[in-house]
Image (cartoon, rainbow, N blue to C red):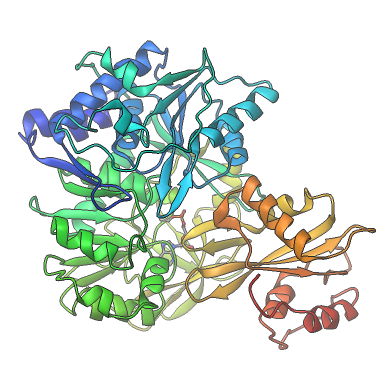
Length: 606
Ligand code: WTA
């Protein structure tokens, strides 16, 4: 209805509490990094916390349309923060806590966020991450660039025990690990403690009523030019799409316990930890830790602890755990499991079969869901129990999704075919724009093949009509299910004074799927050494984040280029793999470069 208004926070909380009478139902079982750090939060408690924090944000001047940056680990306050923004019609821009200060700064500036919400520190497995320090660095960089962020709200997470309070009104035990070695610096006039602000805030907060097309959030994803794109999703279509896909793809029933292991810093967490499950009144697990801590049976321990029925993870996690054999899995019951999902990259049949045979004891449906930050929710996916599965295929389109496979000249291919995967008609969850750059939205997704949405993925359709994603066909890499652009890694490398030029390609990796293989040409007067390699890795970690750390760095006195000076990445990929079948190299300006690179390949990861 034209002119109607809504609010997604109202729909996922107030409506569940007041109309559907789900107030006492658990919204989240929170499981901390340490197995004994747990708490739970009901729909009613979540609503109260969100109202309180919405009032805090309102008092800090946040209004509809404002942008709020969130840089937090997987703790309940992260969900509270994002829903509070949604309640006020403010756009949240969540930056994964594994990104560097520099990446956070870049994202804050791109969407001019006036407020940042962060956390003192957290543990990821054994590793302590001093998040406040990174946030401070990011804010300092913003100030240097003439953009002072007004406020920084800090959750006391590791220091929670000192407060002598549990996390939720259900009074969880205080976190065990206190954190004596974390030094928090405090910027008077900017920093505010979350717990102090909410103490004074009221429990009720009228939502801001929004148009269906009002923006809901911004989430940055790598772009092939190197500069991340602020993908914008809107209220109505996104809400409908994540609610519906969650319901059908995971065959949701009210008694389910759903667990998506993704981080909320990625789209999978936005859609299938926060919005999709809550829209359905589901109970979910929210997990702060990692699959290998304190041991490699952690995931299955959690599955049994909460009787998880539907489980959603990434192929990289499956491959990682496969390495440790069946026993860490089979020693846990897993009897509650019914549906197993995967997302993020093509799943190799070997991992699929292990997931099905060992994790699912051959009883569970596997849903291999293909989708993107841009699509908001699932696009190609089986429906559990209804779609005959083929290991490694995302099978068929979801309701209302119209895929096509095009050849290089943009013709639609029928029947068995391989080519560019595109979508022929819009669906409710499609992104609406790139924040602040609508032209980039049009060029990236609609220019190559006018009239179609271009995914950037290659795809094959078999004789039975099943779709098989073959991977990215642009300059993007998929490392452990995270997209990176070769350009962003290359620009981080060339910012080092010793590097004149760099070219980065994807290289097969048994756990990560793909890893980074970098070729660097040094400036005169610099020598290639183990110290330099370490410096370059550090540089990438600082500019982008640990996910972009390369596995290989090779000294390249020259790079294969076309006569017009374009680096031939196709050739570099083959060199990295020691594949001498290079195809046509007649366009290479200086062929001697190739044999030199072959004979100096990196043989081991560094
Ligand atoms: C890849 C993650 C094969 C693909 C939700 C896509 C997949 C990119 C699958 C989007 C899958 C995601 N099978 N490939 N089931 N799921 N991909 O934006 O290359 O982080 O374009 O969204 O991941 O990654 P993004």
